[in-house]
Image 1 (cartoon, one colour):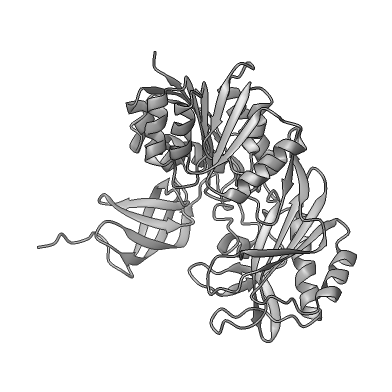
Image 2 (cartoon, helix red, strand yellow; image 1 turned 180 degrees about the horizontal axis):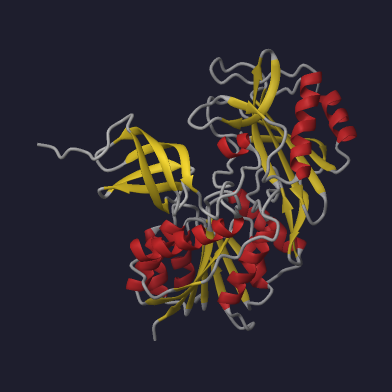
Length: 457
């Protein structure tokens, strides 16, 4: 006979929250049975309604807070909290940084079995709002009117919005201006159900250091209706615009950008700086969305690399060369590898842009290219990885263990896969010396971190 659960659906119960999940939900327990409730904070007592029960956990809805956490703050903007990616704006910024530090500590212990690693307090922002330099918003129609904004959670219903709490004002202004111009000129929004209409998404990128703005319109059709008038109006309303791009995505897909891109007006790229390094950013370039904290993150990676000018460095997920070019300023030679050919073209262009001649880039999988370099007699003193959320390919980790660079610097956007990969490297002869979390995404649950590993002697 199956064990009876301590709560049932539609029960109203009083609980005390003791923790937060990785996505910011409060965790309460009834006879050891965990219940997850969005909006609950550790230390708070509340009345909740059970809305779902599974064998291993339940989900509740917050009805009334009876004892409030000192970390709770008033929500600045309700729709941004619900739909705009600001899941934890009800937590004070001090509380957010403590939550993220705790999150990193917990996964290192639970997943990585790393008990004695020095985890530093999270490096946060002085002003943790309006930091994102890029937005790409879906376009739809409501009551015959063109709208754009956020998707409601677990749906494709668009909430029409004009501003976000976490985007730079210049980005919000650009999106709003393009939406208004398209409305005035009668541009039709794409309908994903019928696969008809024109405009699918509006994207804006703003380079904070140079003040240059890029606008991208993504359409289903090869032709952009009222193109000339559209460009004329955008240029007149957005004085900072340097690039207006048309991207064509004719497929039935959730992928935002299509394969074909053309310049409607101005330049193909805009320029920005991270520290002293200049970057050319195209419509398709991957470029960190929080430029202020990117510098903090890369400075820490550079510090952990401890370069004195004699080292050979390998950057295993180099993208458009952001970290590689930072390292090249202090290293003897940097080798970068990336699977996306366009990113490598960008990396080469960015090296040229900065007159950096000691960086070399190759297209391919890191776990295939790096052993080839090794066979050619190229040895890395320091190896840097900055993988996607899924973490490093296991074959790459085994390649690192085989190559035995003196130092590994791991830049992570997912503490859970960081912990998993550190365990593999530790079992292969490395020691994790310290981990520095960096808050790249205030008001959200995401946390980046840099780990420093040395080869056990």
